[in-house]
Image (tube, rainbow, N blue to C red; front, side, top):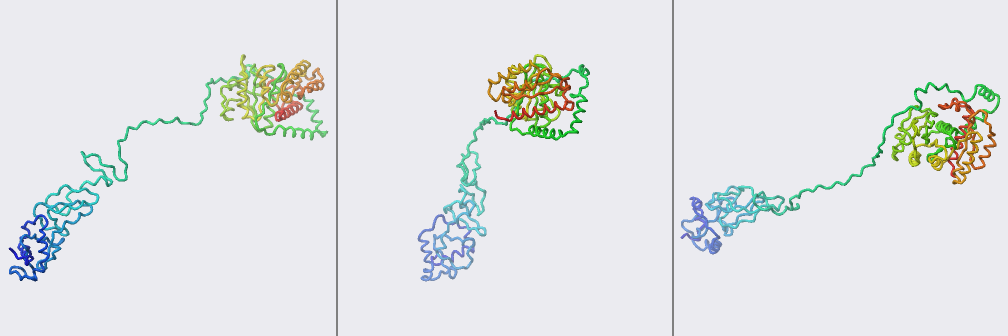
Amino acid sequence: MPNGDNWQGDVLRDLRGGAGRQSKPQQGPPPQGAGQQGAQGPAGQAQGGPTPNAAPGHAAPQQGAPAPESGYGYPPPQGAPAAPAGYAQPAPAPDATYGYPPQQQAAGPIPDAPHGYAPQQQGAPAPDPAYGYPPQQGTPAGSTGYPQAAPAPDPTYGHAPHQQTAPAPDPAYGYPPQQAAPAQQPRATPARTSAYTPTTRPHHTPDSRPVVDKSLVTAGRKPRHGQSFASRATRALRRTVSSSAAKEVAEITRIAEVLQQPVTTGRQISVTSIRGGAGKTTVAALLGTTYAHYRQDPVLVVEADPALGSLPLRLGAETLRWTIGDFADIVEPQMSLLDITGYLVQLPGNAWLLPGSQGQIGAMLGSKAYEGVMVSLRRYFGVTVVDCETLPAEVARVALSASQARVLTAPATLEGVTSTYSVLQWMQGLPQHVIAGTVVVLTELVPHPGLDLAEAAEKLRSTGASVQVLPYDRHLAAGGLIRTELLAHSTREAATRLAADVFQLSQKRH
């Protein structure tokens, strides 16, 4: 048996002869006695004498003691003094490097450890796995400090395992569990609320018809002036030698100021009569022409008499297409003025015409259609002049009640004054504003009427209505298109004064 006091010398001899590489390391931890005996090595060396075969300064190892391994990463140098007993014990393998899996001890003899790595002892307990990686099941023999294969990361650290048969792991940290997406049900799209789209009622597009048949155009003669040449010359001479011109200008200025007053809402003026031939249409045409001449806002002239009315001819319209009955089926509240005027007849100046018929017999106009049209058009035009049917027609009565001012024409004859007086007495039974806003126009149909106009006018004023006289005019009596430049001076003055009085009545609150 080798001397226990000289065991270190035996170790050095084994290292020199290579016996340490062939000797198999002892499995398991060394016996406690060996550890204690090794711990007393220096003391025993002091008590006992040196062993003949031992190297100087080293004690031979005891029999059965395990051969100590070299230092961490470096073999002990030859001839170096023995390490203390605490370093002779087999040290456990260091913890696995962060990010690399641990390795198990190979079954065969361990070759020289590479530089920087110490060989692990067989049978030593496996260290804790590196943070974030699972422990390996086994490592083939001869493994070094380098990992053989990258292990699958732990599914609990942000990744899912790549296994085909393994069940799905728990959801990763910070992510919700993934579930099989159910089949997406088609979501019902709510009905879209779009802007209001105007729906035009179905209607037919009528053909344009001429106001006067082509075969009758040449039948008309050249229009005459409303006043004779002698009368015009006399008037011109009177204005030259007298001061009546200044008064005339002042009166015209006053009337123009009245006619140009602004309105908050459209004013509607109805023109009617007791019988036909009283000059109803002529008065309506004169009023519409006067308002269009003095006012800047749009003016509308409506023919509410579909029974072969002559208003388009008096105003100079050449063709007609849309009538008031057709327009009742077309008009919509959201229409603009440009849309409205597309269905109307353009007149000279800032005026438009809405005819009642195309010259056809049997055209009808109901009161509801008339009311619908007038309510819709009121906000587009400053002044609207309506040529109504003769009383007591239904549309005429509706027009009189809905208008802000009323004009009742009567011929300057005894029959005409008598019938008009009866109508005014009937109107006295209506609300007070009806007769207070009515103007009676006595039209002279002949140059010398057989009636005292002053006395007749006084009788009619007794009912509460206003009275105006429209003198005889050759141009108006001839019929056809009304040309204001051919009107007699007295006729122009009477028409302008009538328009101003009626407009003032329409502005008042009765």
